[in-house]
Amino acid sequence: MRFFKPVFAAIFVGVILGLVFNIVPLKNQLDQVQQTPVVASTDLPLPVLRKTEQPLSNNSASLQNAEPNLAVQQPQSQTNPTATPTATLIAFTPTPTSGSFEEFEPRPPAEIVTCAEIWSVPEIPLNLPLVLEYPRSVEELYTEYNYYYLAAMLIQNKVVDASQCPYNGLQSATTANQCGVEVARPVIIEWQNQYDSKIFETGVKHGVPARLLKKIFAIESQFWPAIYIDILESGFGQLNDTGADALLLYSPYFYAQFCPLILHPRTCDQGYLGIPESARALLRGALVRQVNATCTDCPQGVNRQRALNSIPIFAEVVKANCSQINQIVQNTTNKKAGQVADYVDLWKFTMANYNAGPGCTARAIESAWKEEGELTWNIVSGYFTSKECQSAPFYVSDIFKD
Image (tube, rainbow, N blue to C red; front, side, top):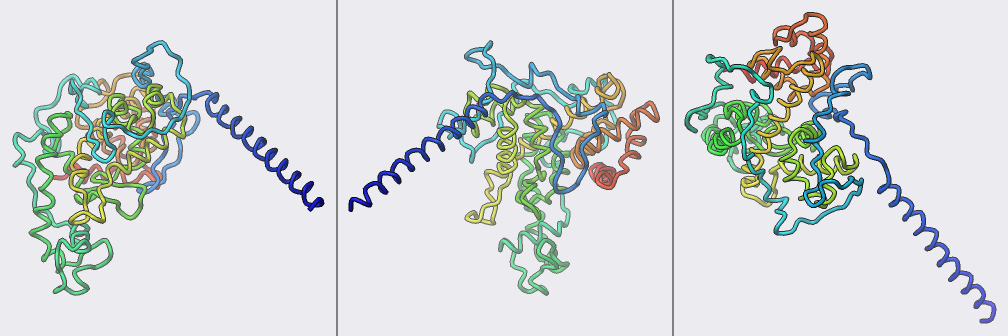
């Protein structure tokens, strides 16, 4: 036993020293996180599913320098407006007063700002493409299209019984066959119109053409508000990291509502560009998950309330893309977007940006301005030439197709 006492003593001392030396590096790491200077970068993350665009070149006059008014993007603390922000990342569990992540629906702005106002468009044309006209009633949003992906989802989630069809109505996991679509048609029509009231209401309250919003949902997800192929894009409008970043960057009032559901309010007070990239990534990921209405325990496989709540979020994503286009045009021409392009073409730039990302759109606009000296869609659309950008003109064509 006398032999083992020194051994036990040595082991005990070793454990104590190990704990001390493990704690010190951990404290140093935390100190480094809190002391790390914040770089206000607007290099937006690039799309990761629908497209694989490359970052802008360092000498590009677009998003590398596209810093919106930081006085707007980094709201000061309401309790101490002169306080210097610190890069402290604090996770936060919502309280009843701060709201619920599960039930979140953004409040509409007190004062509606339309994309025409964002662009400083002097006058909106009288004869607009139908998709840009504001409907007078919800009935004008009614559609009767066959959607093969939607039919497949309805069949797989047992909303529709297509057992009488070959292969149970499925051509693949994500596509119904003709028989499946025919059997599902009554439900397809009902499904694509069940959100019309919310889309109409959102269009009015958030200043986005309701037909445009519905057309985006039809093309992106066929009104199945879940995950398509990959978890990196989700919801009615297939939101991804890039779209979430644009919304949080260009809409301070949305950021102010959403951020406290994920991070501590003191962290959020620093503004989106004032918090560490790790915190921004956390917010973007949470926002992409927020619009995903997949629900294995819900009837029909969809959380209907979450789906409804996501519609205003996508309206704000569209407006964030409008702001991003204004920034790109302003960086390229030193003029407001409405001074160098017309209203309809600016919407087409915005939809190209929504689809292909800001890198593709900025390069196309810069090239068109440099080579042609004007910005019309007919000209700009010819400069989406790289492989990762070529989908944009086709996407815009689909959006504006009657």
